Length: 339
Image: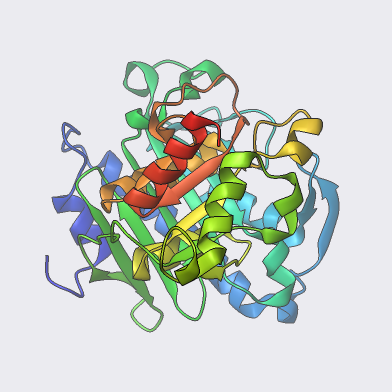
């Protein structure tokens, strides 16, 4: 499709396969884009409107919330709950699901979101973002959804995407037929197509991981990183660069732009806390896995394909390895061998 096409026009012609021409899916993507535009404006103003700093509260994960975490969650709910496009919403910032208010029509979709990913970067003006995942609602939205209706593998996602708030605001989306990138034209007020059919190279010389936790890694991850650090003199016989932004949206966007592999493995530190990983399956790992796979990359836990993981609870955590297909497969091989 022509570069500069509006997001709305693109969505009309790129509905997920099998979705009816009711306008509900297009309407939902428009609702999400409105929320992202509002969040982008808040991020842009920052300290000028007193939205930086702590909210003096914790989310359901027991993590301290930033003011923008709370505000962004409210913005997303307000944008989608009254328009008849979703039946319910689940957010990383809420313990349970959010039902549509009485009197509002329920739609045919379920929305999951991380309203503001990369919270630790908010106050230091480093890229952050919004991640979303869309599932079909039970019974076409006629039945009141339950939490169990959200607990489906990522392979059942209808669409997924994220919005990156950086030097420019960009939305990346897939409806199951490739990954496309849109850039917000602030003067025009619309997201316009700037890249289509993005492809991640199968090989890379760049990896992203939090090296400060190296002493806690399991053997397969340590082996992989040691080999990368050994460079031309090691078994890989090439030099690698390391990057780390501490914002999954920024990490994935870099991989879509120039390749690479991103890792947030489980480690002994997390295991001691009774956690299977750091990142959330439903709000972060699944939507990013769909985006990456549709761009020719791969995503997994180290043991299985991410989109095949069957969730057992709404805020489930998982190890994440995604990006260049050959690197993800190498890491899976190391996990299978136990080395």
